[in-house]
Image 1 (tube, helix red, strand yellow):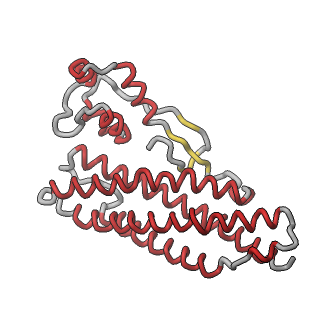
Image 2 (cartoon, helix red, strand yellow):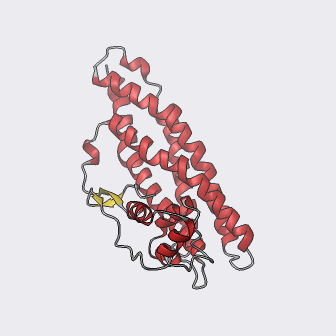
Image 3 (cartoon, helix red, strand yellow):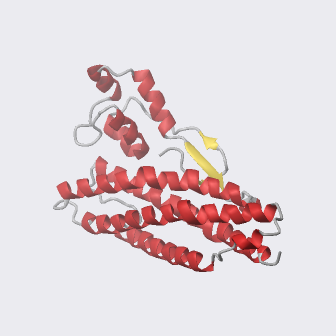
Length: 258
């Protein structure tokens, strides 16, 4: 989760200063991204996480220096500046960026998060009844995203690259490749609108990803992860709607003039 592209200065920033003298729960509360590291080492960070980090390492035979370095790495931020010239980026680069960064993130992180959210809610629905609605919304987002992005990766993106290379090489038969993006892109546009509505509903249901005062650490982590999903998808769709797809439609138009 430490490598998500977000608006900012366009650099890899160092991780936050973490107080390693605190308890595991305190560390996760300050930066929920550290939860993934503790899961890896099978160290509880919720109800039984009120134990100093060094003591937990000693009790479980874990190298304290190795663990703390992984915690530092987990809190680094890969930041993509809003001032970068997105409009000047070549189509194949845009596609590779979206596919390798945003789509990979969706495939690898969102389904497991959806499962953890559902599992947590099943065991805590009496204490946190608001999560029932949150699970319903996030499950819809997950299911839609997986189908949506596979369609882009398997059909839309290869087609856009094909017409881009034909245009770039000025192939006289390039117009034969054109199968007009108008209809498939209209469908993509409708799906983006649906995703955005679901994201707005998620933000409303979670009160802008603000957990209640009685939230446990697991609850805090889930909300932070959903907020990260929200931010990632906002940039993902921004790159497609404002740059990639308009460029592709323009290339189609020019190829038809060959």
